[in-house]
Length: 121
Image 1 (tube, rainbow, N blue to C red):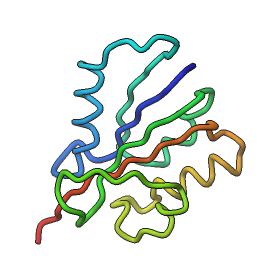
Image 2: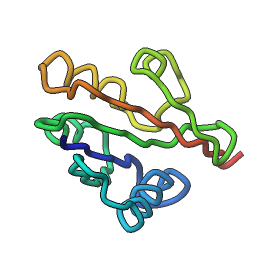
Image 3: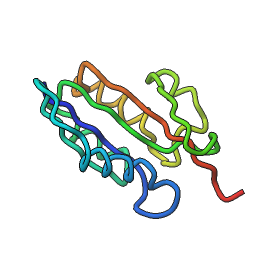
Image 4: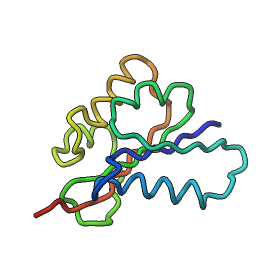
């Protein structure tokens, strides 16, 4: 089973939190029998469309704006669509995943994890 763990964000500032988590997982994740784990960081959700093709499952990590710093939030695609604070990107994760679903390119299993960050206020 091929699983992809994706961190979405900017290489700068607090929005980088998902990249940092993916980097730590890449370095410290033990092998899991029966699973082929891959890790990728993306600067923009639009890159998801091509990247998720061919995987059995995807875990997506992204910053949640103005959520309590360091908190983790497991979100469904519907919750992500409904959340105004979910993404700092113009084309957000929800829209990119919905398009991948419409194109029948979305893996069967998708987990979305938001990581709370506070913005400059």
